[in-house]
Image (tube, rainbow, N blue to C red):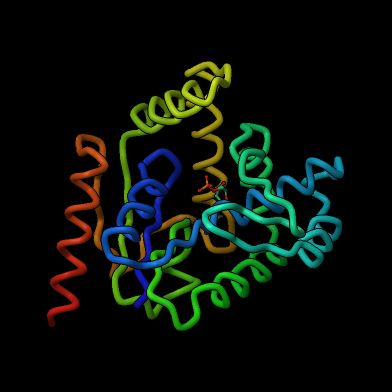
Length: 217
Ligand code: DC
C-alpha cells in the first residue's frame, strides 16, 4: 500500500509521515531529501543552479539511497548537510529542472515498488503515485510554518532570523507552486488537513484513522 503526504514546508509533514509510517509498520520515503541531495552536490561543485544541462548531468551521476534513516549520496551519509538553509534554497531551484525531476521520480518509484510505504513530498499524490491508496495534503498558516522551522533550526544550534526564514519560505512556496513541472498542489482525491491548530500527534491520529477505515473496506 502506498500512502502519499504532500504539502508545503513547515506543515509538520516530515514528522507526521515518519510517525505515521511507524504506527502503521510501513517504510518512509522523504523525497524532499532527494532534491536536497542534488542541491548538496550542486553547492559543493559551485555550479550555476540555473544551468540546466550541468544540473541535469549532476542528477544523472547522483546515486541516491537511504539506509536506516540516513540519506546516502554517492555512498556518503549527507543527512546533516541536507538541513542547511543554503541547501534548502538550492533544492527548490534544482527541483524546477525537468531532467532532475524525471530522474528522481523514477528513483522514487523504484524505492517504493512492492512496499508498504508512506511517501512524503510535493508531487507524490499528483505525479509520482497517482494510484496511491491514500493521499493527504497538509497545510498550515505561513507564519506558523516559519516559526516551526525557526524552532527546529534553533534546536540544532543554527543562527537564523524569523523574518529571513519567512521570506525564504514564501519565495520557495511561490517557486514550488508556480513551476511548470509538477507544481505543488493537492491531488483531486487527496484529503486536506490544516495543521495550524493541531499537534503532530493529532494529525497522525487523524491520518491513521482514515487509513484504517480504508483498509477495512
Ligand atoms: O520537503 P523539503 O523542504 O525537504 O523539499 C526540498 C525542496 O524540494 C522544496 O523546495 C520542494 C522540492 N521538492 C519537490 O519539488 N518535490 C518533492 N516531491 C519534494 C520536494
